[in-house]
Length: 149
Image (cartoon, rainbow, N blue to C red):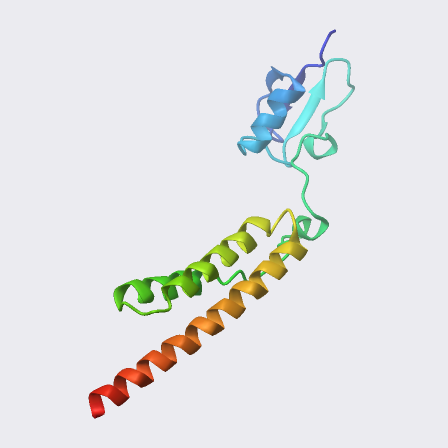
């Protein structure tokens, strides 16, 4: 089987190649070529935009416009902060903070592949964080009362 060989060039630049389609895909992944480049195959009458080729990674429609496909606040950073505070101050919230981290990490891992699952895990992380905040407040109030007495 004879695979097509592509030549690429930046408009006004020197042609490079030949490249196979799989090499072009790798080059787009490595960001060595972009949609501004032109391509030509032997026998073509003129250079055409590389954007016409099916070599670019597929993105969700909203990411094509420069926006993220799904903005899900995973609460990972606050969960990490609560975990660190729990460790530093020997707070009894450590097990709850660990569960919050696990849920936030699940949400983070599902952001692209499963936005609905990411939202559900993020809501769970937020619930565990609220529980953690409440426990921390109770512990701080208890310490204040004990020190005042």
